[in-house]
Each structure stands twice: as C-alpha cells, then as structure tokens.
Length: 251
Image 1 (tube, rainbow, N blue to C red):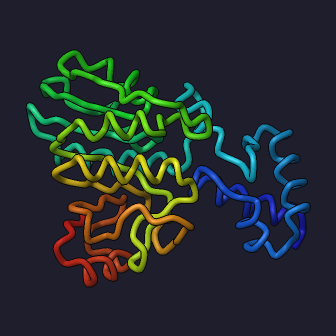
Image 2 (image 1 turned 45 degrees about the horizontal axis):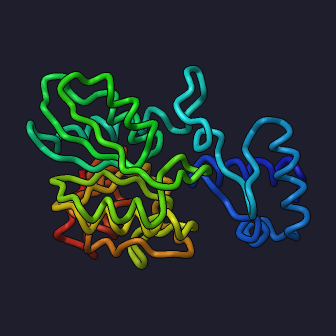
C-alpha cells in the first residue's frame, strides 16, 4: 500500500473516531507498528493530527471548536442536533458529554427554555454559557487531555450524586452485537456512570460510526432509549438495530 493511501485511511479513522491506536492501524493497514508511527509523525508534522502515547487524536479533540476549524461531517452533525433538540422540554435536568456534535446541540438550544445542564466537558460548558436561562454545572475531575473531558474517581463520584432526565452521549463505535464501545477505559468508566444516573439515554452518532466495534464496552443497545443519526429513521442501515432492539426509538 502506497504511503498516500495509508495517510488517507489513517485520516479517515481519525475523522470518524477522533482517536486511533497504532496497533489497530497496523492491523487495518497490514503494516508494522514502526511504519504506522512514522506515518503518524509525518501527519503530525503536517498539522493533520496530534500524536499521543500509543496512537493519535483528532485536532478537534485537543483544541475543539476553534473558529474556522474544519469539523468532519458538520452538516450531518447539525442534522442530528436539530433532532436532539426535539427531546428537550422546559425545566429538564440534562447531562451532556463532549464533542463536536454536542457542541452543535449546545448552540441551538432555544433561549426560552429554563434548563439545568451538567457536563463533563469544559468546552460544552462554555458554549452553554451563552444561554441566559440555562444553569450550567461542570462535573470536575482530572482533565483527559486527549479529549478535553473530565475523568477519574472524582468525576465518577460527582456523577453518582445526580439524577438527570436526559443524557446526551456521543459514541466512538456502535454495533448491534456489542453496543457502544471505545478504546479508552477512562472515558468508558465515565460514560457508564453517566448512563447510571440518567432516566433516559440518548445516543447521538453519525452513521459512519455504525457497524464498528472497539475494545471496551460501555453499554448494550438495550440500555439506550433513543438513537439519533443524520439518516431517516427507516433507512436500511438502521434496520438491524430496529429489528434487534424494538424498544429503542430511532430518530
């Protein structure tokens, strides 16, 4: 495989999943980890991604929401955000994760709504501060620098003090067989706690992340109340989910 083709495949994985492991890229590209590390260094030197221990992350994960910065599949994420807003009602208590799709939701929350919103993402908290009638609380803890989300025991303990009406959560990978999965255990544990303290769980994802599995499971799809993608609810890609989990509402 030519270097240019490897670069395209690496950037595709970065754009889809925000973070990649060298060992997974080695398997995907059928090259050595040394070759992957050299490729990642070249892409980092070209300002295409950020290298971290064991792999790389998207630039939007390290310095997200910078004005003028390109966001992967932004139109699709804006479509998802519009669907998600329909679930929000006045006087709700809502729990939000981080990420660029969550940022699109934060941007279009109606100003007339009186809401209490907790988030593990400092960036989402700042985005929400523009809404006069939204009370915003950040769930503190150690900052996971590869995702700008708070993680660790302190974060999880604070989460378990809450009871929220809705939880909006993004996803790294989604499949019928294993549900929500990720490659980072710190984030997995925080996500699990977020689900435990929420009455309704709303999963938001672009469709390209479907039919993908990563190392660690967050939750089976039977735990999810709503699945929101940019696709129409009856799209062929979503039918395996609706057949396997008939109680899951797809928007």
